Picture 1 (cartoon, helix red, strand yellow):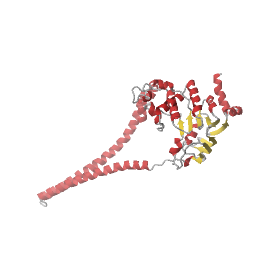
Picture 2: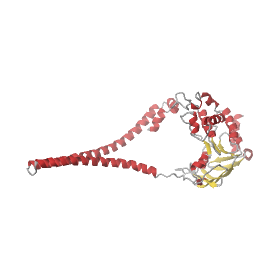
Picture 3: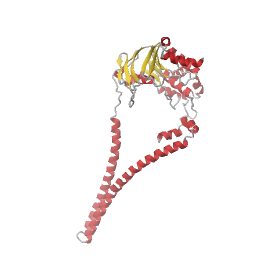
Picture 4: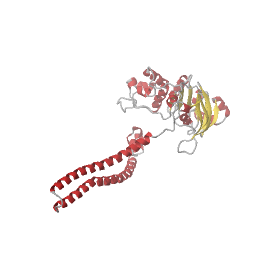
Length: 388
């Protein structure tokens, strides 16, 4: 229900919903979910009402029975009026005690359910265990026969992946959608651990490093990276608070990401809101501009290794060229990994690994792979033919 409501009120879905005239369909879907939920809730409410009624009536019934019994004894002269006053007073106390007892029983049961939820959360353990070593800088990265299958799936996302990178090397990962490029990056950042094989940084298994220390050495741009409805400054400092001059460094990062058009629209400079969620004078950015801002944030973050997952997917040709020219300077002296469907961009890479169905099928320089006349050369020519 929450998801359907979100679709109905989210501005990013507004165009599609109007185009498909989907409002009635969503209303019916919402109603079906509500009806099913309401029926279940009605059953639970009925049971609760019956239990509450019994527990609430029990003290009254008990008091009435005792009161009637004493009244009959007074009429039969086996008890005095004083006895009646004494027992009715005791009944009132008993009624109050039983009422408190029944209320406490219900409250204890309700609180026990909540405590069970807290215990379940408290007992939850992440499969990613923290190490003890501190990683100061990334010198080498090595994958040794790494295989991985996502939970609840049957087929490997990666199979027997092996390669080694050293500092200052630039690696391009190439392959069709679903070939395992993004999965490889997630394993390197320990979003998951491999099922088999070892990933080493500086010769040490990455499981030995503290997670915070490991990830602090990487700056990453993901395909689905989101920006935040704060001001421009906060969109940068959320990634790294260690800069002495955050505004100056953020401006430099925006220039490197070919985001001059964003700066032109920033009427309040770094205090300008990104979206109008909190700032009525904020900027509404295009998809390409959102990508530039996210890229700038990855450039802004201090790192010893840079990872860019499809960094130019939504950029225009001019911005793409400017970004990759800037990237060649930003990656100097640092290990860099990037993925790209546009093979014209791999000129920046010292080495190219071609993935297909989770396995490495080619590994070499651009010239070597073109000479091999295999998968990379085939994909390269397919893109090249579009411009003939």
